[in-house]
Length: 94
Image: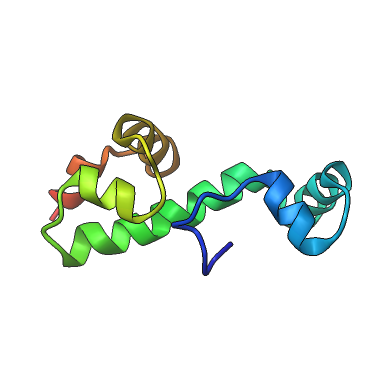
């Protein structure tokens, strides 16, 4: 997930790749990481988005797409939930 965060990733896709049951994988992942797969993936995406906000002039919509969010509104809500700031506020914090 860390290397493929920008792609469309689902629990079923991961479970097929790992050759195991989706429910089992979900429980195992949560037990090992403390997060559900979606939350972990969103955190990976937000971490990369933070880097892009810091080093590029890409728009928030472009960054959302670049890191794997199809909807920039959902990206902004998720970013704020994880970081406590909107992407625009994060970028302008300095």
